[in-house]
Length: 449
Image 1: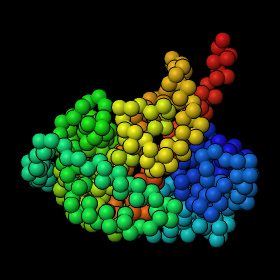
Image 2: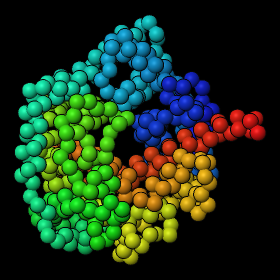
Image 3: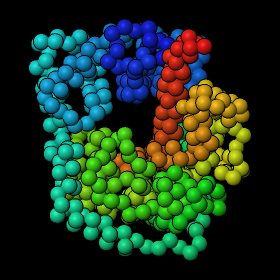
Image 4: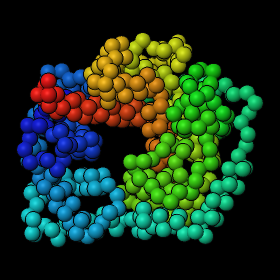
């Protein structure tokens, strides 16, 4: 809220702001956090709850970069104008241009609408030249050809028919996965990484991630996850079905209508990879992306990399112990989980969030119809493993496409903790929007009375 208040005091940054006047989520993620606030360098600015000194320093850093932020907004406006003239529709403009606009703002200042239009066009051609034919339109053309679509549908049927059956009884990997999780979080405090690296290598060699992924194919409870059923894909929030089903090839994709991870079509899975890739030329060609995705869709955890499957399994151990709203529900985590350093670290950070306190009040004293968006978020916080694991899978899927394994305990923790921070930030943004919408409606309600 400190950041939101400071931002509203700036003029000329409308292109980087939401409809309510605060900074866009991507403005915070791509510009403010890494380039202006820099919480790693200035930790007093990075907490969920700021001290008076931290709030003062944050405001000072924003105001010190005010001119650069205004110039960034001007460059972004210019790039969008040129983008429309060139009829470029590929990618999300904010993801692709925000940081380049900030770079231009700090090196060249405000753009000249006439002289810098040529520069903007050259920059756009440079950015989108990296696609090298790997565009969402090329993907659609590839998948909607009738003969090719029939061939790919046959490949899907064959691949899914060859999956191994889940074992008669679930395997027991909880203890060793939790031990690796503790080794990973200990690296944050500078602990010796050798034991964790050794255990990580042993579990990858033993294909523990594969075994846990195969267990996801077991038909599970449609109600909840318990310690006795840790790997039910529906209960974990990865599919709406009792067990993962064979995906369709798909004929279209949109980020606004994506299903749960295991319910997405092949088209949607490849589409999301293209959407977030800034240098697509480094990806395989479209036909290879599609056929590899078919193989990936029927693999354990819908991932091909063994270290990434293992990371997903460890993510379950972390996710099932998350408790943003206290007291904990004893059905979802044992005392051993509750006492782990990893859970204490993430939960303590989450429980300090102001919106969690509001959600806790709504859980105790629900208000029918009022602030319904907050009520939805409060409900999500009762099953926090679901948004966490959905976002973790998306991160792991992106790494899998790029063949980026997890090889070090600190890398493992950075990935798991980064997803937790991302979920918290997403909830925080949604709460801010809900409160802003409620504030805007309130005067009208008062006049109606």
